[in-house]
Image 1 (cartoon, rainbow, N blue to C red):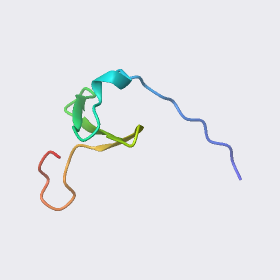
Image 2: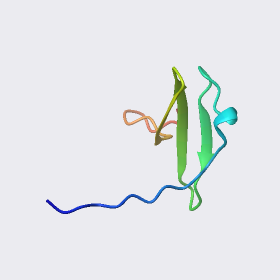
Image 3: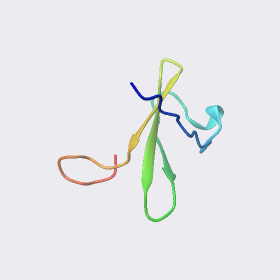
Length: 56
């Protein structure tokens, strides 16, 4: 198995991602991600509904 490295990019401060309040972040070139704080853990996903294509 090949070892893969991950490159992390800081896009927000933890204090900017409130629990229950998603935060959209622009990543350049028209790409947007959505950040979610769930019980103190941060999750990130594309800011686009896979069914309708609308922002989350």
